[in-house]
Image (cartoon, rainbow, N blue to C red; front, side):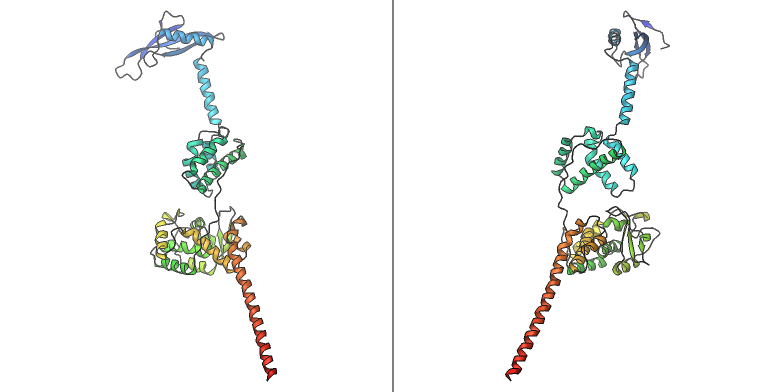
Length: 392
C-alpha cells in the first residue's frame, strides 16, 4: 500500500498519489492512479498507471477497474503469474538452439564440431533456432533445401540437413523432444570422384615439394602420399601415435569413428625420422605447439603450380586417392586389405578403386596368355626343326 497521501476522485474505488515523473531531470510531478475492488471476495489494490508515462486518467482507471471486476482483463497479480508461467514454459521448451547447445556440451571433442557449429549458425539457426522440433514441418525443411541448392553445392546442403537430423535425433534419444514425423530429403551427391597422378606427375610433385622452403608442409603432403592418411588424421597425429618399434601408426578418432592402426612403411618411417621434434606432442604442430588447424593453402597452391598439376587436383585428398590408386592398380593388394589401409568403415567407399584392380588382373591374365603363346611358338619351332631333319 503506498505511503503517500491519497487523493480521492469522483470515481468509486479510484484514487491517486503524487509522484515524481520518471525520466524527468527537473523533478516534475505526476499523478499515479490506483484502483480498489474485490475479486472473489478478496480486496485487491493495485496500480492502474502513471499520468504522463501511461497517459492514465481517473476515467481510464475507473474503466480498467470495471473490466477487472468483470474478469475481462486479469489482475496485476494474475498477469505476473501468467508471465512467470510463460518464462518457465520457455525454459522447458527444447528449441533447436537449446538442443544444439546441449549437443555441443556433451560432445566437445567430436570430430567436425567446429565445422558443424559454423553450419548451424549460418543455415539452421536463422530458420529454426527458436523453434522446437514439433514446430518444424516438412515444408519448412523442403524450403530450406531448395533455397540452399540455388547457391550451395549438394554436398554442403547434405551436411546441413544431416546436421539438423542429427541434432533432433540426439534430443529424442535423451527424451528432450520427439523425432521428426517426416523423412528429411537429403540431396544425392556424386561422391565417387577419384584423383590420380601419373608416375611423372608424382615425380614432379616430389621435386616441387623438396624445392620449396616450407619443409613442414612438404612433409605433411608426403605423409598423405606415403600412407594414404586423411588431412585431419595427419593434423592430429602425435608422436605417441607412431610406434617405430612395432612399425605401426595409430589413427585416433578417424572418420569411421573407431581408433585404428596402419603399417608404418619404410617411406613414412624415413620421412618421420627426418621431422624435427619439438616440445609439442604433435608431429606437425601449429602455433604455440597446439594442434594445427588447417593446411597452408598458399603452399599447396604454390607446389601444385610448380609441379604443373591440374587446377582441380585437391592436394591432400588427391594424394590419398593417388596412394590408393597405386596400390589397387598394382594388382598385388586386394580390396579388403585396401579398405583396412584406408580405414574405410564402409567397403563401398573402397569399391571406387575396384576398376583399377580389375585392370591389373586383366593385365596379369594377359601375361598368362602371352606365356601360352610363347610356349606354342616354341613347340611350333620344334616341329619345324624336326621335319627339317627328316627331310635331310
